[in-house]
Length: 467
Image 1 (tube, rainbow, N blue to C red):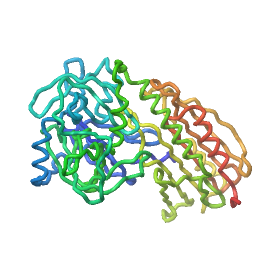
Image 2: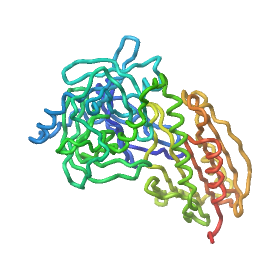
Image 3: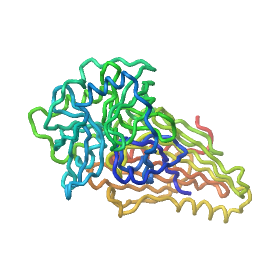
Image 4: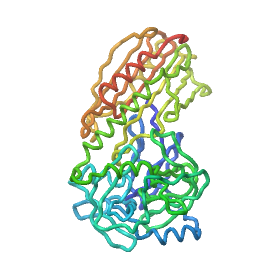
């Protein structure tokens, strides 16, 4: 039985012409969010996933209040659209938004808005367009892939409307916020909503904005009624109504402090992104292994799971399917992954356990069923543009209480040195009419941390009660 993929319905808020031309809606059992843009992207999963759906282009924005009108009137000169262009022909590949900081020529936007020319400057370049139709080239200065932020430099200055001061505005739940950007590449706009607290289900904090953020608004500012920066538009939920997310302003504040003052930025940010991904994976694995994993009973077996704000577990069973065997499945997956490019997300851990028991099959037929399920697992191929083909080792092993058949597969990232995807698959071999199959996937980890995580998972599998 194939590993269940982490299904998501989170949309990031930047865009492409394909999303405008053919918007689709995608349902998924496990809810998540997608960047509010107009370029299709894949969502975090354990073995790859289908492109996420574009948001509904037909949903009208509510009429703005007088406060929104006043804010937009004073701020529109400092709003920019940030575009990624194909160098050959300078055709538009993706669009997002950004805002000029103070009186400077620095613009804050999302990393996913600039990811194409950050990682492939030979093919893509950046351009800005303001509310008056003026345009120019952008220079990428700094990225924060973990919080989905970037800073670019343009050849014009702000009027001082959008400031990121040392002392940021204090937010209270329910207060009005106003998000600005260029939704669906239709023109600059402002949407009104409310702040509803900090969301900690992702590995990094985001703010919940109960208001519309549509494709193309990624990287635009979200401000209080007084014009103070609260956050940066980043994503929305496709499975809910007016559930959107902002990157907290403090992360933009931190990134602006890291903008190089007197040295040229790198032309290609691949090594910068790799360094930040290595930083993330260390924190992720350290958190996973900081305390013993929770042990759950599945038949006579005890299986390790991790339930936290960042990782949720779900279960299902075919017990009423009128078949000569039962299957119980537990899936635990992280609520988010790190966006690297439109076709790559990484930095996530997934755990799955499948307990099968015969209720009408003899030992031979049950062995055939469980063996087919084991062989049906996928580990990727050497045709992947981002990862090498899997290098796998299969052994029969025994931990303290349980004999197991185990397969460990490792894949290296082609562009990001030092990062790997690990997949460990195990099957119990102690019973003829029941079988436990377990899998852990650790995506975007160092080799040492991949071995740490899979070894801890293998050692935790057990037969009988855990003392």
